Amino acid sequence: MFTRVASPPTGTRRRRAVVRALLTAVLPLLATLLVAAPPARAAELTEIADFGENPSGLRMHLYVPDNAPANPAVLVAVHYCTGSGPAFHAGTEFASLADRHGFLVVYPSATRSGQCFDVSSPQALTRGGGSDPVGIRSMVEYVTSHHGADPQRVFVAGASSGAMMTNVLLGNYPDVFRAGAAYMGVPFGCFATTDGSEWNSQCANGQISRSPGEWGDLARAAHPGYAGERPRMQLWHGTEDAILHHNNLAEEVKQWTDVLGVGQTPALTDSPQPNWTRTRYGDAGERAPVEAVSLAGVGHDLPASGMAAETIRFFGLDG
Image 1 (cartoon, rainbow, N blue to C red):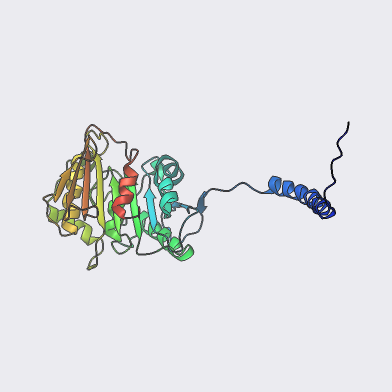
Image 2: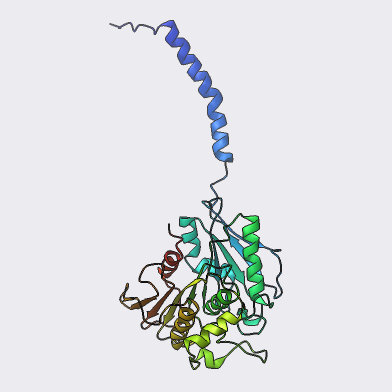
């Protein structure tokens, strides 16, 4: 025995026919679009060839995260000797933090032999005097004019030679940078030479000690007559640094506390990690004028994992 199945109503048959026709027409088109659509592209490091006055022939690389707002902040990230901007981009956490928080990162590259930045010549230690600081200042001007960056939120962080340059930039251009972070650096003017040499052994070995006022005068002399707000400074140094002696940390603290007009006695001393001794001067809060971190048992190998995030916190870019 067979059971007769009733046919669907005429209206239902028509609707099904329409759906089949639409699917027949649309599915091939969707398949084509899916194959042809390019994958989502992440932000890329880009070299800027012509960024303005550049007396020492520095190279510039720029990282613009996909989530950069209309008026982004800027971080200038300055590499160590033998390094480069792309190497510092790949080897530090600043780019991933930029992805998270939406600021731009400028990576200067030194091009002289040894790929160290000029932090010793009279030209480098004078505002507008020439050499590397002028080129880096041009990079900042480029991103403010071409990418709408906020000139009131420009920061600088560097390691080793880049840390020395951080000190130099804050002395030369206190009106450009809101704050700096120096990993394994020396005070402004400590590396000064007059014989054309780029290395000052006395400073590197931690043998130069001056009073806070003397150090402060050196930094102030880079921009005579400047009476505006001075940038805050964060300082990092390992106790076992064999390249730039740990003594330089205390000398940097002397300099920047004097420049910022705060006392030499810490407002806070704590240990946020087991081998860290952190001191804050002028204020106990996270935006203290000067913050220094001494790292027990650590050599010339900074910043390590997690430290860049502390710098971004100090700058106020983590909000």
